[in-house]
Length: 126
Image (cartoon, rainbow, N blue to C red):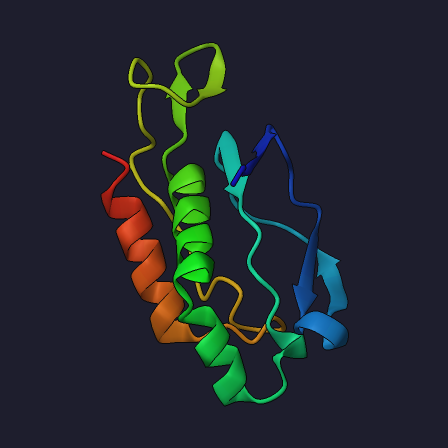
């Protein structure tokens, strides 16, 4: 249940497509990234068989708890001014969280389930 933190990363390229159709689309020209970026991995449901079986697996309590804890870990990172990221009440929480359909593309996650888990994960971070 650990996020990966990136600090001072830069974006160099633009892409198009997704997963197996991902392609280079030229150099990136835009705003710099935020000072810290947290990444959290999602469960992979491609080997569950059907979409129904994948949904049934996602609704298992242990699976939902894993995803909820992962979202909380990623969204709850606090930043010590001038020092860096940390988990703890003495640091400042980032002003915002940006996310999307976490694990719902190539990993076949259910958008509604993932939305609720991300919402709940963010709600318990205060």
